[in-house]
Image (cartoon, rainbow, N blue to C red; front, side):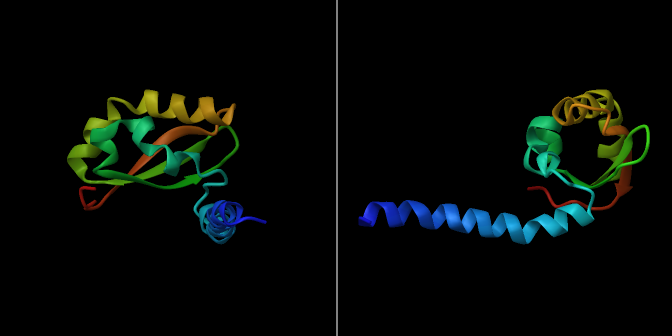
Length: 111
């Protein structure tokens, strides 16, 4: 095996290892597929992704609840785009995974 092949396999192995370690955390928070966390910027837009954080998805019969941590003013603004947020998430999952958003009023440091 030449040196170049070793260099390429190390990042792949590290990515696999990190994925295995983080999977139980994401599952506990309801993120069985971490799509929402990884794509939060595309789901809500750059402005909102800097001042809000998806905390967990509670899957229930008939659709789940996505809890989003943000301040009160941002939660009010996000109410206007909630249909789009839900639609983007459900399109990814292929079924009605989320039908409601819940906002937790807290300070979120601007990213």
